[in-house]
Image (cartoon, rainbow, N blue to C red):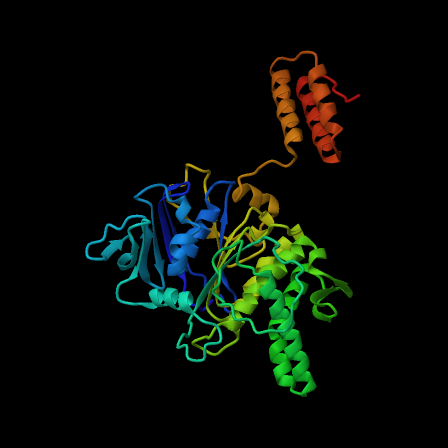
Length: 453
């Protein structure tokens, strides 16, 4: 990763389940691959809270009060978030303790430039550099297709959930999209805009057809670029050949999947989820005036993904992050996940195992991702699960081993031990093999013959 625009550290005080927590996001420099940070842990441990806190760093002034996702998780007047972005310190929260608008935290000094005392909300960032402040202002006021706009973006930040929000929508016609690429860009569940997304696909298909009719192959390839990247990504993840089509009567966008034409409402949930956020991200990247001319997918991006594994088959869970890591080589990506297949799928990444709710204090250290490890080991090391069977079978094994210890210490009639062994053996071949091995060992140790009926 060569993106200089990265979040380097984050600290939360009295926010959500966290009293005080701090995380340093160590860099990973790998050519042509995104930098990935994975948040894992039990339900309620604060994974989404961390993503919302990261999103608020880049949220606009307008949304800062009304549509903030992290603000409802502030627990009192002392709630605040410290951060370090692009080597510059910042802070936001409920009550500003700065003097003359100048403050400092564990990461350095900052200036408060947004302070709404009526609602209890302030934001401060770098003192000697207006980069983040300028980004928030530009993204807040950006007007699409304004030729007089001086706005040029060096980096962008977007956030998505794994929800399958895409749905069938009839189009009234082919028309330009005037919505800002920063509209609801950090809202997670609301980031995907189905009507705009389908309009973008329709416009793309029309422009490609017109360019081909004019025998302008270069322009046609340019229009096709984003959709081709999306279809390649889907092929790599899902083993499906996908083609986006524009139907004339009625005017609607459909998808050809492995040769069959399917409307969006009929797509598998996992495929719909991937298309939803990846396509929305693509149309936003295309619409942004960049400071540096390059492939839009290679621009510096901060990407937040909440529960990226939702609705995905384990086979797809194993493939999605490696594919995204290659698609967005200069991105810094933060992901929350419950899936050992996601954690075990990617190398050159950091994993942060969050403790149970109420225990999330102190410094959370990242550990290298688990590519190359077995899922059995990942479940144990990362998710704290050392069970091998379902809950009921594990409970029977606990009873069996307790009866085994009692029998070996005080040999007696083995009926209860054998009855539990028979229940386990009936649950499957693996359980039966373990039980029979244990019974042979018990027989050698006790001198009694033990056989299942």
